[in-house]
Length: 118
Image (cartoon, rainbow, N blue to C red; front, side, top):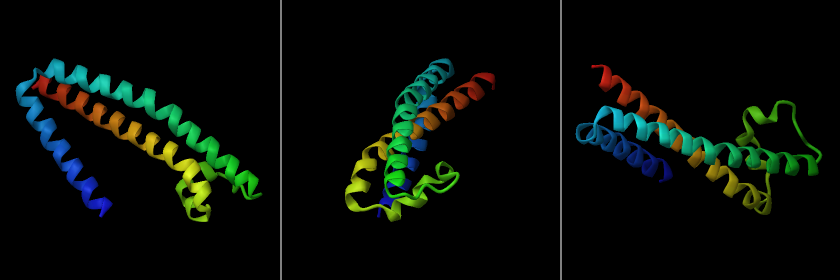
């Protein structure tokens, strides 16, 4: 069910970006994209970092910190108790939201530049 919601949100976002390109100048669109990129990085980097810190602490308490665990940390979510999962969930979600905002902003900035050059 969540995947369908994410797909609908993504499609709506793409449609909204296409509509905004027609009513905003490319320069304004590019600047909005850069601001979104910056906001996503400012929000996403600290929260994503803290998610990794909390997950590392949990894995160390259990005595099981695999090498290169940070490359794919979600692989370890299945091993967590509900209480441990609750401790990382907020930081995981906030980091993901920051990432999504940054990627959307970067794409909007690129689209603004491409349209300006055409």
